[in-house]
Length: 178
Image 1 (cartoon, rainbow, N blue to C red):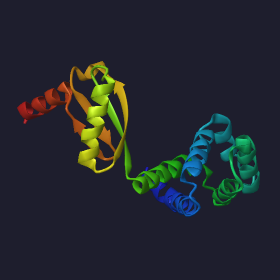
Image 2 (image 1 turned 60 degrees about the vertical axis):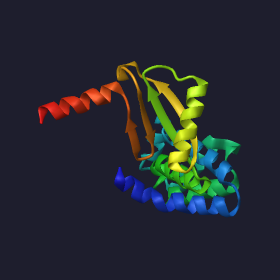
Image 3 (image 1 turned 135 degrees about the horizontal axis):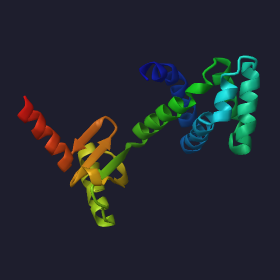
Image 4 (image 1 turned 180 degrees about the vertical axis):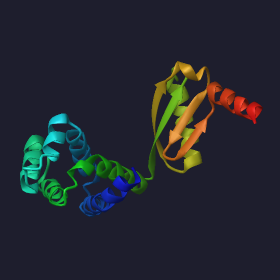
């Protein structure tokens, strides 16, 4: 995983710097997201690993699959990535691009998993508290998991706050076993 991120970083950084310089962060984000999804498809995966195809064949086919959803700069970017035999890294490139974009926009995606559904009011209140703590705009994504028994688990990048009953039971069991 770390190796793929290391290989993807220069491409993501170059794409981000270009998009930022041309005030096209949102459009590049959408296009790279599409490229990442397309690259995960079974047919495209077979094409990417086909030894008989040249890098030009691969980039041309990839750009044709995406059609008019890519502008000329992204088509060129895909061609450069293909020339370096890195099309398989498109999901990592898109993920890193999103991290750079979030850092620039001072925003963060937060995943909240709760034992029960959170009301809109609870989600708004939680988003405000997290925004104050993290010093960023928070985009909250709430899901339910009854196995938590009660409480919530909050994930924001590397930060994990486990306030679930299941988590507390696990900590108690660990303390009793040691």
